[in-house]
Every structure is written in structure tokens, then in C-alpha cells.
Length: 367
Image 1: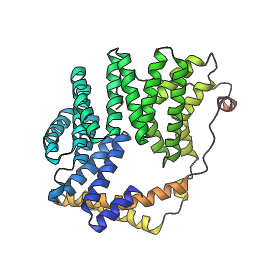
Image 2 (image 1 turned 90 degrees about the vertical axis):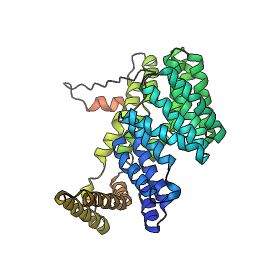
Image 3 (image 1 turned 90 degrees about the horizontal axis):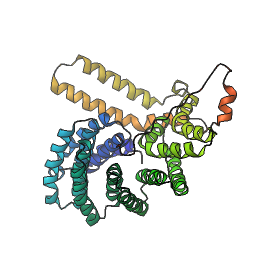
Image 4 (image 1 turned 120 degrees about the vertical axis):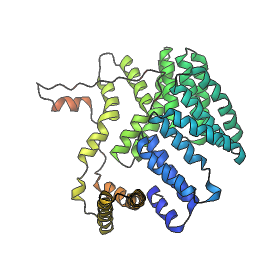
């Protein structure tokens, strides 16, 4: 089910708990795709709805997501305060999983502050909570961060052990977003140790998983965001191909073509949205949003402005399924990958294509 449609169904039926969940998942999606500023709208809306039901006064999943978004935008002290307050309430609910998630956030905050010892210290109880709760996804996330910290501290064998533990946890639950990153990080570690064959095998699996994610992405924008979150996979592949290319840039070009060019070209090849006839319901919804925005410009009262903002938010949610369908109809048949030879064939004698790849340092944490 499309999330936008799920929100509409939950709201129409008065299913408050589902509405909080779907709004929170929307927020998680924006954080995962590197747009934390937009995630706040969904988290705040979820918290506002939750406050209307006594049983939902402490929606842990929403609060964990909001803490992540705060860290992403650099509001670390606010994130820490939120985590500490929520963590104090978690034992009352008997939620080992959320205690694991919240304790892990304290480790992330310590990483942001470059407090390595404190970060590793916080990860131990987080892992214990996760094991007790059967939270393999949480264990995989802990492994990814722990391995990164250990490698930066030149503790390579411990870093490798952490990655292998995370890979095992990810495989057991079919985790598609963390597994490619774990595989790529282990591949980069193997490459640093001169074990190129093992690195190549690991990266091939990571590539296959990444290709599956990109194939199922709903739009070029989503594909770009997926690739941004998978920069470790791309960087490790660039490093491997750079060492293997022996003067032949075609393999490196293939990596960069997928990572940078394909989504942009797909977008350029798509039918203009202006050429796709909009359904009457979509046009009606857009007119309503425009009218609400005009009212917002003319309203000075804070309460009235908040009411209008809520109405605009709901109206945009109702349009989400229709706009997704409209974009899908604008897409053309998927094209094949562009090769270096094909690229060279269209360049004029006085033209030069320069691609630069600047991978992050192995110990840096992706934002």
C-alpha cells in the first residue's frame, strides 16, 4: 500500500495508532533519504495526533526518528535531551527494542562529538538490549557504526568481526538497506589488507543488492537519494576498479555512470509532466491547496495559521498517491547503461568529459 494512501485511510477511519505509525514512517523515509528538515513536519504531526490518545503519549518510534533528524541537522544537544527523557520512560513500557534504539542514539551523539570511548561504551548495552529483543536490524546498525569507529582507531580485526556480525544479522532478516553498506565496508577493509579477490566478491553482492533497490525506486529523485545513502558502496567500487583498471577507464566510467548520470538522464528522458493529462481530482486538489496557501498569506493569527498549515498538510497527503501515479505515467522504458565508447563517440574534438570521484575517509560517518 502507498504510504500516502495508508495515511488517508487511517485518518478517514479514525485509526489514530495507525495514523501515528504511517506519519512516522514517512518521517523515517525522509531522514533515510537525506532530507531531515522535511521529516520534522511528519514527526510533529505524529506527536500532535498521539497526544490526543492517553495510550499513545510516548510514541517511541516517532521520538527515535525525531532524535535522528535533530542529529542530522546539527541540533545535537536537543537530540540528546530528547533521547535521555525518552529513555527514562522506556523501561516503564518494558520495551527492550526501543531501549536498544535509544541507547544507540546516545552512541551516535557521542560519535558526532568525536567521543570515541563513550560511543563504544554506549554500543555495548545497546547491543545487549537488541539481542534480548531479537532486534537483528538494530544489531546490524550497531555493527556498521562500531566497525567504522574501530577501523578509525586502527583496530582492523575487531572492525572486521563487527562487520561480519552485522552481515549475519542483516541476512537473517533480509535487511536491504544496511546489508550493501556492511558488505561495502568489509570490502574496503579487505582491499586495504590487499585481499582484492575477497573485496571484489563482496562488492559484487553489494552491487547486486543496490541494483535491486534502484530498479524498484519510484523516481529518479529517489534513486539519487538511495545512491547518496550508499556512498560507501560506490567509493569502495571506485577504489577497487581504480586499482584494477590498468589504464582502461571504461570500468571506472561504468561505476560513475550508474552512480551519477543514470538518474539524471532518466529524468531528462521522461515525458514532461505537462504532457501528461492530470486527473480532475488532482487538479481539484491543487486548486484547494493554492486557495489555502493564499489564505495563509492573508492570515495573521497564530492559531488560524496553524489550522491552515494542518489543512495544507492533509491536502498534500491526499494528493500523494495521485502525484506518484502521474509521475509513473511520465516514465519511459528503462534505458540501457551508457558505455564509455558511446560517450566518446558523441564528443566533439574540442570537448572533454572530466569525472571526479572524491570518496569519504573510511572512518567518516555518512550524514
